Length: 150
Image (tube, rainbow, N blue to C red; front, top):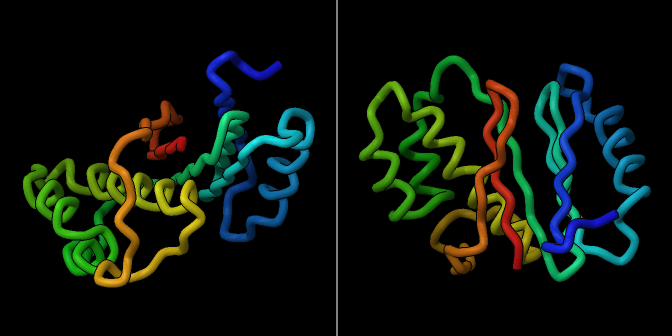
């Protein structure tokens, strides 16, 4: 049964590794049980998958597995794909928290884009999207995720 809010989140332990075939199958099986006629979004990272079902509108979800260290070119990636506001927030993070901050910014942007039916593009050509309607996901240690509803 779908909650009154209209938003249902699903999290599943999935096989480790880069091949997402089995993870996709498991998530699709879980969704088939609850998602008739609703907005659906899915994201996978090695070892875990998430799905969101929203019966009142569009939804986007994104998941990232945290690595031990932040990529060395995080600043260029943020500038190219996340935009100036996110870059400023990341620059303001303490060094030891920047990997988590980056994952939060990245998953928020990806979830926004999915919710609005847009693909990832470099910032100068990126759509301007609302900054509301997003929530961080409560996930197992080592994962960061965001859900956006419209």
